[in-house]
Amino acid sequence: MSKELVFKNDSFKKRRGGHSRWLSLSCEKCKNQVLFYQKDGPGILKRLYTDRIVLSEKMPANKKLICGKCKAVLGVLVIHLKENRPAYRLFVGAIKKKIIRESK
View 1 (cartoon, rainbow, N blue to C red):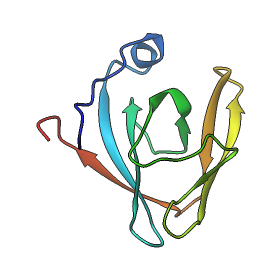
View 2 (cartoon, one colour; view 1 turned 90 degrees about the vertical axis):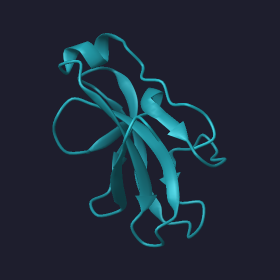
View 3 (tube, rainbow, N blue to C red; view 1 turned 180 degrees about the vertical axis):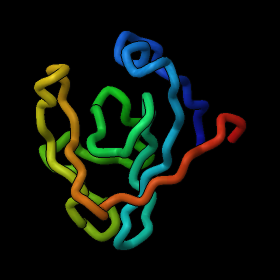
């Protein structure tokens, strides 16, 4: 990683118990790293809130989350009504995740 990742500390993080971790997300199909994501709270990864995404490659702001290498569609942009926040709803089995330690 070229720059140091800093956690966003806001009301959404506090609402989920104040526990965050960094995830490295890659395409399941071609194993290409797509982005880094701040995951707040427990549970599985269903959606990616756009304000928590740190892109690792140049990706256009689009209505679809697309792998830069194989062009597979990984998710679609929606508005999560419960919090009124834009997020990518992930397709099942499209993303492979790996937890990143803070020291890296």
